[in-house]
Length: 73
Image 1 (cartoon, rainbow, N blue to C red):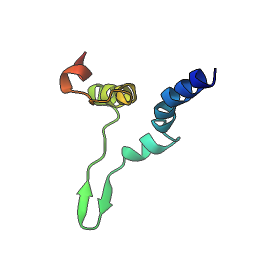
Image 2: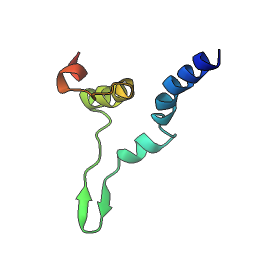
Image 3: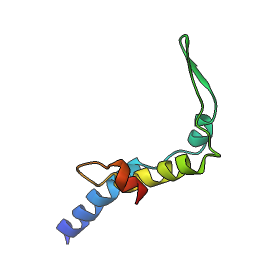
Image 4: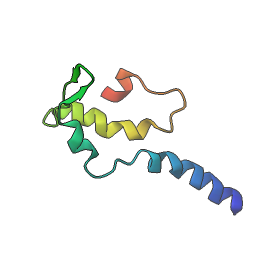
């Protein structure tokens, strides 16, 4: 039983690490200035971009990462 519990906790850990705190996504929608460099905002109204952002946590358990093709699927 201990092995089963440990495997389950190991599986859950990346999910907990991928959670975003309240307000974090909203802060990405504001332009940021770092030093003399202006970093544009993320356009939350862009449906394709938001689909990518929402899909990224599903790939945290994939050891080889992901490709553009796998995101499209």
